[in-house]
Length: 454
Image 1 (tube, rainbow, N blue to C red):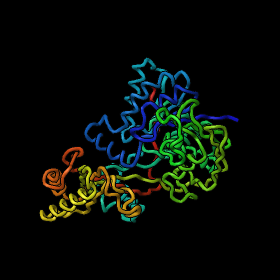
Image 2 (cartoon, rainbow, N blue to C red):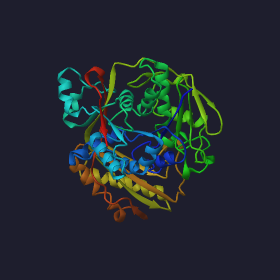
Image 3 (cartoon, helix red, strand yellow):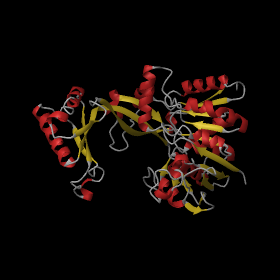
Image 4 (cartoon, rainbow, N blue to C red):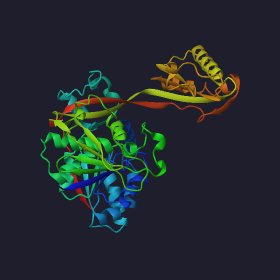
Protein backbone atom coordinates (compact mmCIF):
# COMPACT_ATOMS: atom_id res chain seq x y z
CA UNK A 1 0.00 0.00 0.00
CA UNK A 2 1.28 3.47 -0.90
CA UNK A 3 2.86 5.39 2.00
CA UNK A 4 3.61 9.12 2.16
CA UNK A 5 6.09 10.71 4.61
CA UNK A 6 5.06 14.19 5.75
CA UNK A 7 7.33 16.07 8.17
CA UNK A 8 6.64 19.29 10.05
CA UNK A 9 9.58 21.61 10.72
CA UNK A 10 7.95 24.67 12.32
CA UNK A 11 5.46 24.77 15.17
CA UNK A 12 5.19 28.57 15.34
CA UNK A 13 6.81 31.73 14.00
CA UNK A 14 10.07 31.66 15.94
CA UNK A 15 10.65 27.91 16.04
CA UNK A 16 14.09 26.43 15.34
CA UNK A 17 15.52 27.53 12.00
CA UNK A 18 17.55 24.31 11.90
CA UNK A 19 14.55 21.98 12.09
CA UNK A 20 13.57 22.19 8.39
CA UNK A 21 17.18 21.61 7.40
CA UNK A 22 17.37 18.58 9.70
CA UNK A 23 14.24 17.08 8.17
CA UNK A 24 15.40 17.57 4.59
CA UNK A 25 18.99 16.42 5.07
CA UNK A 26 18.82 13.59 7.62
CA UNK A 27 16.40 11.18 6.02
CA UNK A 28 13.80 10.68 3.30
CA UNK A 29 10.56 12.68 3.31
CA UNK A 30 8.00 13.46 0.61
CA UNK A 31 6.56 16.66 2.08
CA UNK A 32 7.79 19.32 4.48
CA UNK A 33 5.15 21.43 6.22
CA UNK A 34 5.95 24.65 8.06
CA UNK A 35 3.37 26.17 10.41
CA UNK A 36 4.00 29.83 11.26
CA UNK A 37 0.65 31.39 12.11
CA UNK A 38 -1.26 32.05 15.31
CA UNK A 39 -4.17 34.41 15.97
CA UNK A 40 -1.97 37.25 17.24
CA UNK A 41 0.48 36.75 14.36
CA UNK A 42 -2.07 37.91 11.80
CA UNK A 43 -2.53 41.33 13.41
CA UNK A 44 1.26 41.78 13.68
CA UNK A 45 1.62 41.00 9.99
CA UNK A 46 -1.23 43.31 9.09
CA UNK A 47 0.58 46.18 10.83
CA UNK A 48 3.80 45.30 9.02
CA UNK A 49 2.04 45.37 5.64
CA UNK A 50 0.44 48.73 6.48
CA UNK A 51 3.95 50.17 6.93
CA UNK A 52 5.45 48.35 3.95
CA UNK A 53 3.36 46.76 1.16
CA UNK A 54 6.15 44.21 0.62
CA UNK A 55 5.85 42.94 4.21
CA UNK A 56 3.21 40.99 6.11
CA UNK A 57 4.57 37.44 5.91
CA UNK A 58 6.92 35.19 7.90
CA UNK A 59 10.30 36.46 6.76
CA UNK A 60 12.08 33.52 8.44
CA UNK A 61 10.65 31.32 5.69
CA UNK A 62 12.73 32.86 2.90
CA UNK A 63 16.23 32.08 4.26
CA UNK A 64 15.03 28.58 5.19
CA UNK A 65 13.92 28.00 1.60
CA UNK A 66 17.27 29.28 0.37
CA UNK A 67 19.03 26.60 2.42
CA UNK A 68 16.77 23.66 1.51
CA UNK A 69 15.46 24.36 -1.98
CA UNK A 70 18.32 22.72 -3.94
CA UNK A 71 17.89 19.48 -1.97
CA UNK A 72 14.11 19.68 -2.30
CA UNK A 73 14.42 19.93 -6.07
CA UNK A 74 16.85 17.00 -6.26
CA UNK A 75 14.75 14.76 -4.01
CA UNK A 76 11.34 16.04 -5.17
CA UNK A 77 10.36 17.20 -1.67
CA UNK A 78 7.32 19.45 -1.73
CA UNK A 79 7.00 22.28 0.81
CA UNK A 80 3.65 23.44 2.23
CA UNK A 81 3.73 26.52 4.48
CA UNK A 82 1.30 29.12 5.76
CA UNK A 83 4.20 31.60 5.77
CA UNK A 84 2.22 33.92 3.49
CA UNK A 85 0.43 35.49 6.44
CA UNK A 86 -1.51 38.48 5.14
CA UNK A 87 0.66 38.85 2.03
CA UNK A 88 1.23 35.48 0.33
CA UNK A 89 1.94 37.21 -2.99
CA UNK A 90 4.90 39.12 -1.54
CA UNK A 91 6.16 35.99 0.19
CA UNK A 92 5.95 34.06 -3.06
CA UNK A 93 7.82 36.80 -4.93
CA UNK A 94 10.63 36.65 -2.35
CA UNK A 95 10.84 32.86 -2.69
CA UNK A 96 10.86 33.12 -6.48
CA UNK A 97 13.78 35.53 -6.29
CA UNK A 98 15.67 33.04 -4.11
CA UNK A 99 15.01 30.27 -6.62
CA UNK A 100 16.36 32.39 -9.46
CA UNK A 101 19.43 33.31 -7.42
CA UNK A 102 20.09 29.60 -6.84
CA UNK A 103 19.93 28.91 -10.56
CA UNK A 104 16.67 26.98 -10.33
CA UNK A 105 14.65 28.94 -12.89
CA UNK A 106 12.36 26.63 -14.80
CA UNK A 107 12.59 23.94 -12.12
CA UNK A 108 10.20 25.27 -9.46
CA UNK A 109 6.52 26.14 -9.43
CA UNK A 110 5.04 28.07 -6.51
CA UNK A 111 1.41 27.65 -5.53
CA UNK A 112 -0.25 30.63 -3.83
CA UNK A 113 -3.40 30.15 -1.76
CA UNK A 114 -5.08 33.49 -1.01
CA UNK A 115 -8.57 34.88 -0.53
CA UNK A 116 -8.62 34.39 3.24
CA UNK A 117 -8.06 38.08 3.98
CA UNK A 118 -11.54 39.62 4.19
CA UNK A 119 -10.54 42.85 5.92
CA UNK A 120 -11.68 44.97 2.95
CA UNK A 121 -14.96 43.04 2.68
CA UNK A 122 -16.19 43.36 6.27
CA UNK A 123 -18.66 46.19 5.69
CA UNK A 124 -20.11 44.50 2.64
CA UNK A 125 -20.52 41.21 4.46
CA UNK A 126 -22.23 42.92 7.38
CA UNK A 127 -24.54 44.76 4.99
CA UNK A 128 -25.59 41.35 3.62
CA UNK A 129 -26.60 40.24 7.10
CA UNK A 130 -23.45 38.25 7.92
CA UNK A 131 -23.00 39.66 11.43
CA UNK A 132 -19.76 37.83 12.30
CA UNK A 133 -20.93 37.41 15.86
CA UNK A 134 -18.37 36.66 18.53
CA UNK A 135 -18.58 32.89 19.07
CA UNK A 136 -18.08 33.32 22.82
CA UNK A 137 -20.24 36.36 23.62
CA UNK A 138 -22.77 36.52 20.77
CA UNK A 139 -22.01 40.20 20.12
CA UNK A 140 -22.13 41.35 16.48
CA UNK A 141 -18.91 42.60 14.93
CA UNK A 142 -20.49 46.03 14.60
CA UNK A 143 -19.76 46.54 18.30
CA UNK A 144 -16.02 46.82 17.63
CA UNK A 145 -15.92 47.34 13.86
CA UNK A 146 -13.92 50.60 13.97
CA UNK A 147 -11.18 48.91 16.00
CA UNK A 148 -10.69 45.84 13.78
CA UNK A 149 -7.09 45.31 12.62
CA UNK A 150 -7.26 42.01 10.73
CA UNK A 151 -9.85 39.49 9.56
CA UNK A 152 -8.93 36.16 8.03
CA UNK A 153 -10.89 33.06 7.10
CA UNK A 154 -9.49 29.66 8.03
CA UNK A 155 -9.38 27.71 4.79
CA UNK A 156 -8.75 23.99 4.87
CA UNK A 157 -6.88 21.40 2.86
CA UNK A 158 -8.74 21.59 -0.46
CA UNK A 159 -6.92 24.59 -2.02
CA UNK A 160 -3.56 23.10 -1.02
CA UNK A 161 -4.48 19.86 -2.78
CA UNK A 162 -5.58 21.87 -5.82
CA UNK A 163 -2.26 23.71 -6.00
CA UNK A 164 -0.39 20.41 -5.77
CA UNK A 165 -2.51 18.95 -8.56
CA UNK A 166 -1.40 21.88 -10.73
CA UNK A 167 2.24 20.93 -10.24
CA UNK A 168 3.32 23.30 -7.47
CA UNK A 169 6.37 22.23 -5.49
CA UNK A 170 6.16 25.04 -2.93
CA UNK A 171 2.73 25.97 -1.57
CA UNK A 172 2.45 29.31 0.25
CA UNK A 173 -0.85 30.05 1.96
CA UNK A 174 -2.39 32.81 3.98
CA UNK A 175 -4.54 31.75 6.93
CA UNK A 176 -5.45 28.10 6.79
CA UNK A 177 -5.97 25.49 9.46
CA UNK A 178 -2.82 24.02 10.96
CA UNK A 179 -4.16 20.56 10.18
CA UNK A 180 -4.83 21.46 6.55
CA UNK A 181 -1.09 21.69 5.87
CA UNK A 182 -0.88 17.91 6.34
CA UNK A 183 -4.30 16.90 5.06
CA UNK A 184 -3.79 18.77 1.76
CA UNK A 185 -0.93 16.53 0.58
CA UNK A 186 -2.89 13.43 1.65
CA UNK A 187 -5.91 14.52 -0.38
CA UNK A 188 -3.66 15.04 -3.37
CA UNK A 189 -1.65 11.82 -3.06
CA UNK A 190 -4.48 9.45 -2.19
CA UNK A 191 -7.32 11.17 -4.04
CA UNK A 192 -9.63 10.71 -1.08
CA UNK A 193 -13.27 11.58 -1.72
CA UNK A 194 -14.25 14.89 -0.14
CA UNK A 195 -17.01 13.11 1.80
CA UNK A 196 -14.83 10.21 3.02
CA UNK A 197 -15.17 11.56 6.54
CA UNK A 198 -13.18 8.85 8.29
CA UNK A 199 -10.10 9.30 6.11
CA UNK A 200 -10.40 13.09 6.22
CA UNK A 201 -10.59 12.90 10.01
CA UNK A 202 -7.51 10.66 10.05
CA UNK A 203 -5.55 13.16 7.98
CA UNK A 204 -6.79 15.96 10.20
CA UNK A 205 -5.62 14.22 13.36
CA UNK A 206 -2.28 13.42 11.72
CA UNK A 207 -1.89 17.15 11.10
CA UNK A 208 -2.94 17.97 14.65
CA UNK A 209 -0.31 15.65 16.09
CA UNK A 210 2.60 17.18 14.18
CA UNK A 211 1.44 20.81 13.92
CA UNK A 212 3.43 21.91 16.99
CA UNK A 213 6.68 20.43 15.76
CA UNK A 214 8.82 18.75 18.41
CA UNK A 215 6.08 19.05 21.02
CA UNK A 216 5.06 15.52 19.95
CA UNK A 217 8.61 14.11 19.86
CA UNK A 218 9.54 14.79 23.48
CA UNK A 219 9.62 18.59 23.64
CA UNK A 220 7.45 20.27 26.28
CA UNK A 221 6.50 16.77 27.43
CA UNK A 222 5.50 16.18 31.04
CA UNK A 223 5.89 12.41 31.01
CA UNK A 224 9.46 11.29 31.84
CA UNK A 225 10.93 14.57 30.63
CA UNK A 226 14.13 13.98 32.61
CA UNK A 227 14.92 10.91 30.53
CA UNK A 228 14.30 12.41 27.08
CA UNK A 229 17.61 11.99 25.21
CA UNK A 230 19.48 14.80 23.46
CA UNK A 231 17.06 17.69 23.71
CA UNK A 232 19.75 19.78 22.01
CA UNK A 233 19.32 17.74 18.80
CA UNK A 234 15.63 16.91 19.13
CA UNK A 235 14.06 15.26 16.11
CA UNK A 236 11.03 16.86 14.50
CA UNK A 237 7.96 14.72 13.67
CA UNK A 238 7.22 12.72 10.57
CA UNK A 239 3.88 11.14 9.69
CA UNK A 240 4.01 7.97 7.61
CA UNK A 241 0.49 7.88 6.17
CA UNK A 242 -1.26 5.10 4.26
CA UNK A 243 -4.08 5.29 1.78
CA UNK A 244 -6.51 3.54 4.15
CA UNK A 245 -6.21 6.38 6.69
CA UNK A 246 -3.96 4.65 9.21
CA UNK A 247 -0.63 6.32 9.93
CA UNK A 248 2.42 6.25 12.16
CA UNK A 249 4.30 9.07 13.87
CA UNK A 250 8.08 8.89 13.98
CA UNK A 251 11.25 10.98 13.54
CA UNK A 252 14.58 10.63 11.79
CA UNK A 253 16.86 7.92 13.16
CA UNK A 254 19.68 9.27 15.30
CA UNK A 255 17.95 12.48 16.35
CA UNK A 256 17.13 13.36 19.94
CA UNK A 257 13.76 13.28 21.60
CA UNK A 258 11.34 10.39 21.88
CA UNK A 259 8.10 9.31 20.20
CA UNK A 260 5.80 7.46 22.61
CA UNK A 261 2.12 6.85 23.17
CA UNK A 262 2.24 9.09 26.24
CA UNK A 263 3.81 11.96 24.32
CA UNK A 264 1.39 11.66 21.40
CA UNK A 265 -1.50 11.56 23.86
CA UNK A 266 -0.34 14.84 25.41
CA UNK A 267 -0.25 16.48 21.97
CA UNK A 268 -3.71 15.15 21.11
CA UNK A 269 -5.06 17.09 24.10
CA UNK A 270 -3.55 20.36 22.84
CA UNK A 271 -6.22 23.03 22.23
CA UNK A 272 -8.91 20.43 22.72
CA UNK A 273 -12.54 21.36 23.31
CA UNK A 274 -15.14 18.64 22.82
CA UNK A 275 -13.03 15.63 21.75
CA UNK A 276 -16.00 14.18 19.87
CA UNK A 277 -16.32 17.21 17.63
CA UNK A 278 -13.02 18.71 16.52
CA UNK A 279 -14.36 21.01 13.82
CA UNK A 280 -12.33 21.95 10.75
CA UNK A 281 -13.35 23.24 7.31
CA UNK A 282 -12.73 19.75 5.93
CA UNK A 283 -14.56 17.51 8.41
CA UNK A 284 -15.44 16.97 12.04
CA UNK A 285 -12.96 14.58 13.69
CA UNK A 286 -13.83 12.37 16.65
CA UNK A 287 -10.75 12.19 18.86
CA UNK A 288 -12.38 9.60 21.12
CA UNK A 289 -11.95 7.02 18.36
CA UNK A 290 -8.17 7.39 18.12
CA UNK A 291 -6.26 4.18 18.85
CA UNK A 292 -2.55 4.49 19.67
CA UNK A 293 -0.06 1.64 19.80
CA UNK A 294 3.68 1.70 20.37
CA UNK A 295 5.53 0.00 17.53
CA UNK A 296 9.30 0.00 17.27
CA UNK A 297 11.17 2.56 19.38
CA UNK A 298 10.14 6.08 18.30
CA UNK A 299 7.20 4.80 16.26
CA UNK A 300 3.57 5.18 17.33
CA UNK A 301 0.82 3.67 15.16
CA UNK A 302 -2.49 5.55 14.92
CA UNK A 303 -5.69 3.95 13.64
CA UNK A 304 -9.45 3.57 14.11
CA UNK A 305 -10.30 7.24 13.55
CA UNK A 306 -13.86 8.23 12.71
CA UNK A 307 -15.15 11.45 11.23
CA UNK A 308 -18.38 13.33 10.55
CA UNK A 309 -19.53 15.70 7.80
CA UNK A 310 -18.06 19.18 7.63
CA UNK A 311 -20.21 22.15 8.65
CA UNK A 312 -21.43 24.87 6.27
CA UNK A 313 -19.28 27.52 7.96
CA UNK A 314 -15.72 28.78 7.94
CA UNK A 315 -14.20 30.09 11.13
CA UNK A 316 -12.94 33.68 10.94
CA UNK A 317 -10.07 35.00 13.03
CA UNK A 318 -10.53 38.72 13.73
CA UNK A 319 -8.20 40.91 15.78
CA UNK A 320 -9.01 44.33 17.17
CA UNK A 321 -7.52 47.04 19.35
CA UNK A 322 -8.62 46.79 22.98
CA UNK A 323 -6.72 49.53 24.80
CA UNK A 324 -3.19 49.60 26.19
CA UNK A 325 -1.04 47.82 28.71
CA UNK A 326 2.34 48.13 30.39
CA UNK A 327 4.31 45.60 32.42
CA UNK A 328 7.32 46.34 34.59
CA UNK A 329 9.43 44.36 37.04
CA UNK A 330 11.89 44.75 39.94
CA UNK A 331 14.03 42.02 41.55
CA UNK A 332 14.40 41.92 45.34
CA UNK A 333 17.10 39.81 46.98
CA UNK A 334 17.52 38.01 50.31
CA UNK A 335 16.93 38.58 53.18
CA UNK A 336 13.14 38.95 53.32
CA UNK A 337 12.87 39.08 49.52
CA UNK A 338 9.17 38.18 49.40
CA UNK A 339 8.26 40.61 52.18
CA UNK A 340 10.12 43.42 50.41
CA UNK A 341 8.41 42.69 47.11
CA UNK A 342 4.96 42.73 48.75
CA UNK A 343 5.78 46.00 50.49
CA UNK A 344 6.95 47.55 47.22
CA UNK A 345 3.72 46.50 45.54
CA UNK A 346 1.66 48.11 48.32
CA UNK A 347 3.67 51.32 48.07
CA UNK A 348 3.20 51.45 44.32
CA UNK A 349 -0.54 50.95 44.60
CA UNK A 350 -0.85 53.68 47.23
CA UNK A 351 1.18 56.01 45.06
CA UNK A 352 -1.00 55.38 42.01
CA UNK A 353 -4.17 55.90 44.04
CA UNK A 354 -2.82 59.21 45.38
CA UNK A 355 -2.21 60.32 41.81
CA UNK A 356 -5.80 59.46 40.88
CA UNK A 357 -4.79 56.69 38.45
CA UNK A 358 -7.48 54.02 38.13
CA UNK A 359 -6.95 51.19 35.68
CA UNK A 360 -9.32 48.74 34.04
CA UNK A 361 -7.15 46.03 35.55
CA UNK A 362 -3.99 45.82 37.65
CA UNK A 363 -2.18 42.56 38.34
CA UNK A 364 0.83 41.94 40.58
CA UNK A 365 2.85 38.73 40.52
CA UNK A 366 5.65 37.61 42.80
CA UNK A 367 7.77 35.42 40.56
CA UNK A 368 9.75 32.92 42.57
CA UNK A 369 7.13 32.94 45.32
CA UNK A 370 4.48 30.69 43.78
CA UNK A 371 3.36 33.17 41.14
CA UNK A 372 2.04 30.37 38.94
CA UNK A 373 0.09 28.48 41.60
CA UNK A 374 -0.63 31.09 44.26
CA UNK A 375 -2.72 30.06 47.24
CA UNK A 376 -2.88 26.44 46.06
CA UNK A 377 0.58 25.82 47.51
CA UNK A 378 0.42 28.14 50.51
CA UNK A 379 2.79 30.88 51.63
CA UNK A 380 6.33 30.73 50.24
CA UNK A 381 9.38 30.23 52.43
CA UNK A 382 10.74 33.40 54.06
CA UNK A 383 14.22 32.19 53.09
CA UNK A 384 13.71 32.77 49.36
CA UNK A 385 16.91 34.10 47.84
CA UNK A 386 15.15 36.38 45.35
CA UNK A 387 11.71 37.42 44.19
CA UNK A 388 10.75 39.28 41.03
CA UNK A 389 7.87 41.73 41.46
CA UNK A 390 6.05 42.03 38.15
CA UNK A 391 3.21 44.52 37.83
CA UNK A 392 0.94 44.97 34.84
CA UNK A 393 -1.85 47.45 34.17
CA UNK A 394 -4.47 47.76 31.45
CA UNK A 395 -6.55 50.77 30.35
CA UNK A 396 -8.10 52.37 27.27
CA UNK A 397 -6.38 55.62 28.31
CA UNK A 398 -2.84 55.52 26.93
CA UNK A 399 -1.76 58.58 28.92
CA UNK A 400 -2.69 56.78 32.15
CA UNK A 401 -0.60 53.79 31.15
CA UNK A 402 2.36 56.04 30.37
CA UNK A 403 2.07 57.66 33.79
CA UNK A 404 2.15 54.24 35.48
CA UNK A 405 5.34 53.48 33.56
CA UNK A 406 7.06 56.39 35.31
CA UNK A 407 6.11 55.30 38.84
CA UNK A 408 7.76 51.87 39.06
CA UNK A 409 11.43 52.79 38.68
CA UNK A 410 11.54 55.24 41.63
CA UNK A 411 10.92 52.31 43.99
CA UNK A 412 14.54 51.31 43.43
CA UNK A 413 15.60 54.19 45.68
CA UNK A 414 12.50 55.21 47.63
CA UNK A 415 11.12 51.78 48.54
CA UNK A 416 12.34 48.62 50.29
CA UNK A 417 16.06 47.78 49.98
CA UNK A 418 18.00 45.33 47.82
CA UNK A 419 16.53 46.02 44.38
CA UNK A 420 19.08 44.29 42.16
CA UNK A 421 17.56 44.63 38.74
CA UNK A 422 15.15 46.90 36.89
CA UNK A 423 14.01 44.52 34.18
CA UNK A 424 14.04 45.94 30.62
CA UNK A 425 14.08 49.53 31.83
CA UNK A 426 11.03 51.75 32.16
CA UNK A 427 7.83 49.97 31.02
CA UNK A 428 6.37 51.06 27.68
CA UNK A 429 2.72 51.44 26.77
CA UNK A 430 1.76 48.71 24.30
CA UNK A 431 -1.42 48.31 22.33
CA UNK A 432 -3.56 45.34 23.36
CA UNK A 433 -4.70 43.24 20.42
CA UNK A 434 -7.76 41.17 21.30
CA UNK A 435 -9.20 38.15 19.52
CA UNK A 436 -12.69 37.93 18.03
CA UNK A 437 -13.64 34.45 16.75
CA UNK A 438 -16.59 34.30 14.37
CA UNK A 439 -18.27 32.13 11.73
CA UNK A 440 -19.32 32.90 8.18
CA UNK A 441 -21.03 30.79 5.48
CA UNK A 442 -18.67 28.99 3.16
CA UNK A 443 -20.79 30.26 0.28
CA UNK A 444 -19.69 33.85 1.01
CA UNK A 445 -15.97 33.38 0.35
CA UNK A 446 -13.72 31.16 -1.74
CA UNK A 447 -10.00 30.43 -1.76
CA UNK A 448 -7.94 31.69 -4.67
CA UNK A 449 -5.26 29.38 -6.07
CA UNK A 450 -2.55 30.74 -8.36
CA UNK A 451 0.51 29.01 -9.81
CA UNK A 452 3.71 30.99 -10.33
CA UNK A 453 6.41 29.49 -12.54
CA UNK A 454 9.88 30.64 -11.51
